[in-house]
Image (cartoon, rainbow, N blue to C red; front, side, top):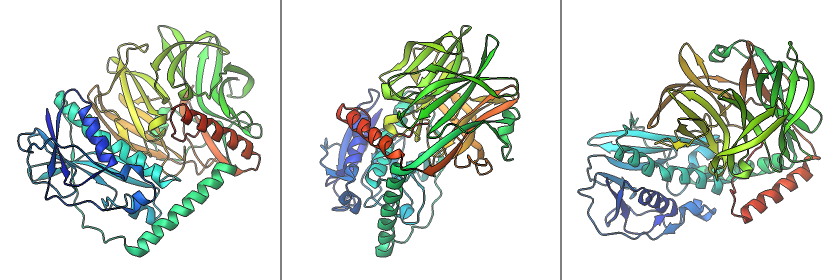
Length: 511
């Protein structure tokens, strides 16, 4: 497939260069960059660039001097709407409500919104469709927020056009045209700056002093209970020891023992381990066993059975791998067997069988641990694993990150997901999976659950699993404590070391 990229006569922002590089990296695409002399010039020095958003720094792009005519698809980066036509459409980006190249997401931030969206649009003849959208959280640091959003959005043309070149059908929805918003103006810009300062101050205070305490509880009902809007009534386990928490619950029964596998986190140590809490018939904990301990953080002890043997796939993104641990003695002895995804910083990897193959869903630490859902498929859970043609299949801070075991109700597959739009693990989302093949994916959000009625642990919910007619959930309680300061310092030192070693610099929240 021949892809022509229309660029303006002057320089382009850095993230447009990323988009072109991603296209050129795809072997199925032949890319030519075409300069359009009479296109609308971009802003000379946008405010966002002055705030340190490197993704908007102007760079030179070499152009081949070819024509747009004759290309199978055209990516319009001029901002002015080129008049070319192409059989596979003319594509362009839309960033935020204003689509303002000088201040992306400026209106949303000025209004205090927690999220903003980007979109990839396709025009074919007189019809314009939205082919891909992403919802991004407004984080503490505006340059990082915009870099993450534009870095992700820049990959989309390469992903979608490569899928088209391979014969996949890429559907879109009609673009709803709204009247253009009024310019943000001086007052709006002042509000924008004010909100940035408030967010930064609140985030700094939270990072230094806020302690998240998670606990695990049980809800009567089968998985179908999660499809109802009725509030979840939880019976909680006793409160964890001070300055510790348990989270990410999964129940496994083996050899006459029923164990609740959880992440146990101690702030004094600054990392999680996997514990097995042995349950009696009434879901009371009768003893605790250490299951897996390592030199780096462990969480999300996802169980899977392979050929009659029990395994765990815990989150080990700090080791930059997704590994399979075999049960040697249940529930307290596990041995690492293989890396399912070596050199891959997968987060909350969730394995399940569907449609005659195995699937693995996860986000990535280095690309926003709560932002983009990636899918992989294989004939065996041991691999080899192949990426979905449209990865990431969901880009939405409110529904991307896995939140426990997928389940089937009346023959329909559902996946639990985290809603991190307002805060990490702030809510639970249930998505109905309508289509899942190696080159297509469709889902619809059918239910959301908040933690407002959870008593003490009413600030979040981010994992569900099932046991004996009960749903197992976790809940979050937050408070401020000066004793967090040493743990924060150790975490900052660890992040700095990873950055110096070339590891992911993305901020992660453990639990």
